[in-house]
Image (cartoon, rainbow, N blue to C red):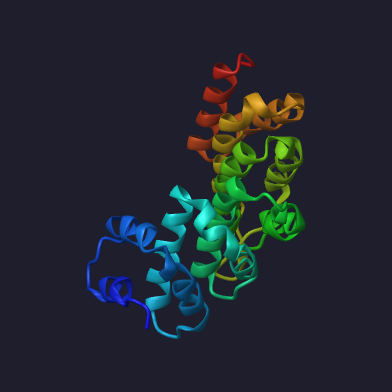
Length: 218
């Protein structure tokens, strides 16, 4: 019978999951058990399982990579919390992606940028930085996907929300700032950011100005 310590530790109210990551990395045989439990657990425990596996993927993507398909499957989950966690985990796993599994789910991964949920899109845009760092050859293809945020349609409480789009655009500027040196087609990025100088959300317009100054495009 497998050592249940990690499950017991996660069940403790207020447990610091990040402190348990070292334990799971050392006792890695429990990783498959946690992945299986993540898929079968009906209670709120599954959120703790998702979180600790995500934190392990940040530090040791190679230990979670054998379960890539499970997390890729969660990209389509109806449970948004699991979906958002999977977006980050899959991005982390690209650092260990020797089989080019990410390329196989590229379209599935980036399609939600166009809508309808802003938080989903923002998580993808933010996680794109990790993907490009692991797979620089995809920089321009990913940039093209990020730029779709400008025409995205996000819904909030049953209505289209231009303000949600503005929030996601702000995330896009932040990510493109980090990726700028790796992007070959910088002109389309600069044009996008310049348009945001007139963004009705003041923090976004301010970030656009800072971006252009930083990259000598002001």
